[in-house]
Length: 166
Image 1 (tube, one colour):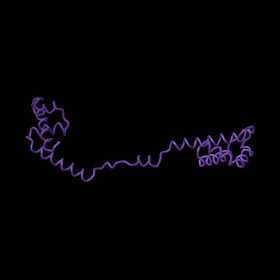
Image 2 (tube, rainbow, N blue to C red):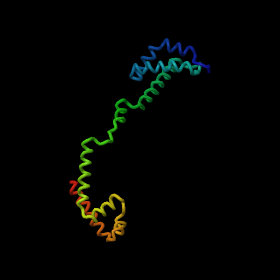
Image 3 (cartoon, one colour):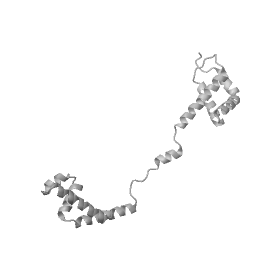
């Protein structure tokens, strides 16, 4: 084995470049890919030891073909510009002005509806929905039955939903 590519391989590639490119083009289906593969092959020959007893034509063709296949595999793993654009096209999470105005309007209607509730019903609704208390905890706090808490909560939610049109 020699320590660097035999000058005969580099010379062979240079002398038979057109023939190798035609054969690779037929095999790969792309003249550009064949030319690029031969260029990469020429560069690789300068830093790679090669056995002296090889058939230069077959060796160079196989080496260039493998370079082309590696390049195709590498390029197939890359995202296209369209795929990158799709990934970067993230919807703006902030609401538009119309959504903000509608949300404010709905909130104002809900507050108005809650103010219209009887005091105990409103307090039960706030205790469950805002403070996060369980219905048994609310029943103990107000000294009423669990069933009454369930009924008051249901009536309060139905009334608020009807006022907000939901």
